[in-house]
Image 1 (cartoon, helix red, strand yellow):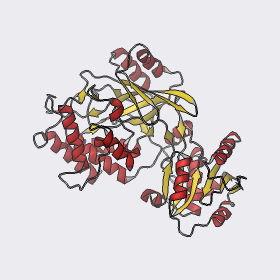
Image 2 (tube, one colour; image 1 turned 45 degrees about the vertical axis):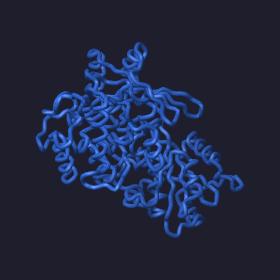
Image 3 (cartoon, one colour; image 1 turned 180 degrees about the vertical axis):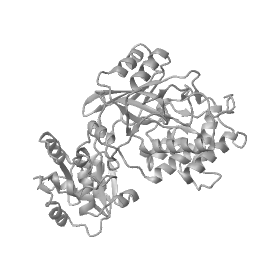
Image 4 (cartoon, one colour; image 1 turned 90 degrees about the vertical axis):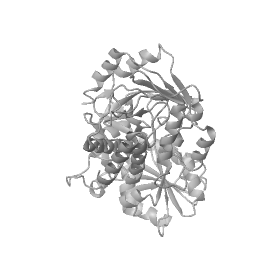
Length: 477
């Protein structure tokens, strides 16, 4: 069953401009964006979720500094915990290709012990260790796991609309992608129970946040072993998530493209010759301009979807490109890895464009296997074709840019229900859930009342407790 709970959310107060402090999720904050967020406002949330790496030490590092920022901001009244437990309707208004949509969600705590949460992507040890260190220092669920659930009759959205249409949002923020984020507070116990009752028999599916989910589970297990206690709904077993109906008209999934580099002895003609064993190859007539935005190849990919073909586009460094259309889906029956029981992966998994790309082109032909993908030695992921083409042009060891059509939400549901995992970055649900609108902190028993103190270093046993939980989870789970 699914068990969701209200919580006392922690939010920025009106002492700051919300637009200046909210950020993209931690895994999107890289390079110059960290500097940009730091300059934007001294209370920008990136200082917590993706702080700069300085000459760090065991007693002064990015995770300890994150906790100290939270402590300082709480004392100064920059952050406050809501007084009454609530769930938080969270709507996102955005525009893609000239079409404006509203995606409707609700931010809640989800009990990890009782709730069935289905995953569709593999995780990497590095990001999980990083998130565990942050959670171990702060005791916080600082960011949301993006969850999908079935609701074709709009039961939950109708309840959320009854709130959003009658009340003003408690927070409104704008991000760097022209998306408007709106947050409401819902404390009506009857409406909360109606949502709880509807979701109770439903399975939940992770859209984004696999690393955060596994980290939260490990943290919970460590807290169990150590026998720690907490109060309210902010317990180690309750994880911050935003739930969005997979039937919501505002839900949009975008493809993630693969830029490949540093493959030894890569040769375009030899690659196409090997690919020709499995794919029908179409070379667009674009007079060497295929690399100018990639529009021609994108149009061909869109037509392939209409024709129900499994197609993958590839750009080369010489500004030529090709469309690869799978000849026989039965080739995937032979080449795809076996499942845990030694049997065949599900038909849905075998016919995903992204698994065809990884199985035949990356692994079988280019030798980029699961180990190399985990090491992130040959593949860089890009949301936009244009960004991938820039990498193709500028990277000294560039080989090719593989362009995909988007994975469908129904495919996510089927693969996750079968207990299978897609390759990493198989989906890109746009926009991301913004970080900093509302978050949750575990309330350990014995934690002092909040009188302008978030947690006192060396004076609060909770810090030592979090350190023990983190250490145990990191070493043994």
